[in-house]
Image (cartoon, rainbow, N blue to C red):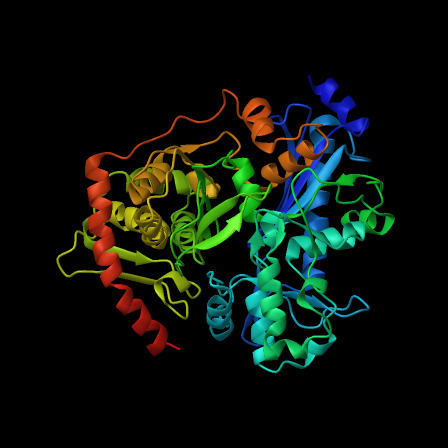
Length: 530
C-alpha cells in the first residue's frame, strides 16, 4: 500500500486542501479515495489587536502557509519517502467575511479586518434597512460601508475588495475570483443568477456615501464561481509563495476559494436541503440548507449559500472553544507541576470524561466564552465570565460540563430562532477538534439543539479535508456536488447519530435559562472591567 501511495505522490496524483483558520493553518492531502487522508500539516498563528482591529499581517499569512506546507512536505517524506512535486488539484479556504482592500498596484490599503471585529454596527444596521436582509457586522460590505462612514482616507483608492481565501487564491493564480459560499459573506447573493444580488448592488451604488468609491461596487468585488468551475492554475510566483524551496511546481489546477463555512459543509456532507452542520473552533456556527426562504429578517441569522449556491441559514457565534482550551491548558500546566507529562489530547480526554459525571444542568455553574463581542446576544466586547450561585455544587465535573455547555450556549439561542421559523432539519453533522473526544461534545450539542448529531470520520480534519474534497470534485468530471459527496465520499462511513436523552435536553434547557439571565452580568463586566 505504501508503495502505491508513493507512486501516486510521485506522479502528482494527490489532491491538497489548505485552510487558514483563526488559530491554525492546516493542510490535508488525499489520494484517489477521497476518504484516504495521506498526510496533514499545520502551523499555529494568532491574530493581533492593532489600533482597535483584530488582524493578521499579510507577512504572517505567507509565513504560516509556507510553514504549513513545509510541515506537510516533511510528513509526506517521512511516511512515504516521496516529495510533493506536483498535484492533481488543490484548493484554499479561510475564515469567512472580513475586509481586505487593495489599490491598483495591489498594495493593501488598511490592515486586514477579520470576522472577529464588531466595529461595524452603524453600517450593518443601515445596509440591513436598505437591502431588507440581515447584514451581519462581520460581512465585507459592512466593513467597507463603515470605512466610508468613518471617512477613512483609503476608501477613494480602493480597486479590489476580497476575503482572506480570495486574497490567497489571487496571489497563487492571478485570478480575482471567489467561491459563491465565501462570496455570500461579502455581499448578498441571488440564488437564481448564482452571483451578487443585482438590485442590492444598484441600491448600494445609489447611496450618497457610495460617491466616495472610485467605481460601482460590482467592479470592486471578485467574480463569483460555483463549486466545480475552473478557477485558474498555480502560477510560477504562486508556487514560490507556497514553497520557497521550489519543490512544488506550477501548473496545478486550483478550485474556487471558499470560506470555512463552505469547506465545513462539504466535510460534513451538509449541502442538500434540510441537512445541516455545526463547525466548532475559535468561533462556532451552525448551518442549515433551506427548502424555502425565511418569513422575516432575523439579526441572529445570516443568509449565505452552499458552495453550489443554495440558500443556507447560518447561526454564527463569534466565540467558540478558545475559552475551553484555556481551561484545559490550565489543567495541563497543573499536571506538569504535579510531575505528569500528559499531552493536550490526554488532558482533554480526562476532563471530558469527568464532565460526563456532572449534573444535567451543570449544578448551577455558568460559563461564558466571550473572548470577543457577541452580536447574537448583544454583547459589544469580550469578557469571559465564570459565575455560580452560592449554593451551587462546585466540583470539577460540573465546572467542566459547564465549560462545554458554554461553548454551545449562544448557538442554542440562535437555533431557537430557526425552530421558530419551522426550518426542517433531517440530519445534523458536526466537525472540529472539540469532537475528537468520543461522544461527549456530540451529546452536549444534541442537547443544545434538541436534535440528533453525527460526527463524520474526517471531522477532526474538518475544513482542509473539506477543501481537498472540493478540489477533488473540480477534477472528478461529476456535475453534482451532492451526488459526489453522497456516492463517492460519505457512502457507508458517516458516524452514527447520537440523540441526547430527555434528561440531558431538559438539563441543558435549565442551564440555558440561567445563561440567558446571566448575560446582564457579562454586559456589566464588559462595561466595568477595562
